[in-house]
Image 1 (spheres, rainbow, N blue to C red):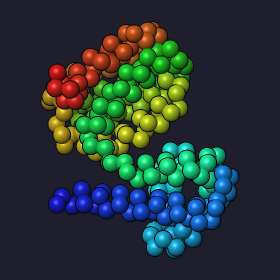
Image 2: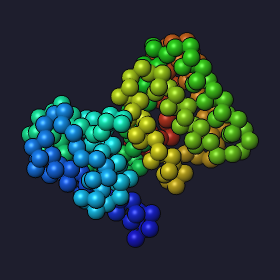
Image 3: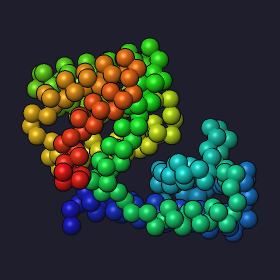
Image 4: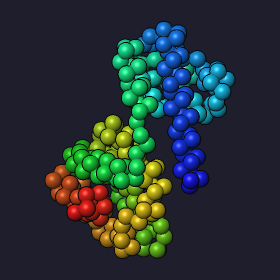
Length: 233
């Protein structure tokens, strides 16, 4: 078995075990919305895992709206009934880690929506951030350097300009996994980075003109290689 995969699988299993134990703790103590969970240190000692593992599990439950962390105050049960919470945690525990193809497919769907919203809602400051990200990408590509991270930062700047915090959160959630795996799967042709400069410029121009239809069209063209990868078209 690949060592990287084994470590990732082990971490996922530990996280699921912690989430299950947090669920049991909530039920055992009859915690209700607004009640405080034990500290990370206490749960770490009780569950026999590291505090960082506890923190990751809490962050995942917080992402799904089941817990709420308040700085210097602690972690609290969110405003949701016990029955609903138990059902949602059971669903979370059954979730499979997304494969790379699923992440790319999700990214495409999010990007086509975010570029339309960014064209409609972007502020001058946000437009400037998109331009800076575009320039950083172009500079690296022209130097023959790897620019995968700069590419994704350009798209994250567009997501931020969409004005939709949930959409932006989803993009932030899937981006690290895509960065890690992008080159390993050789999704794009070798000349895609150079093509990407012109495609990024076209997307930027559409957002600058505040033309959502044009933005979506240019983004769809930009993702043609990914479309072929995901849909075999």
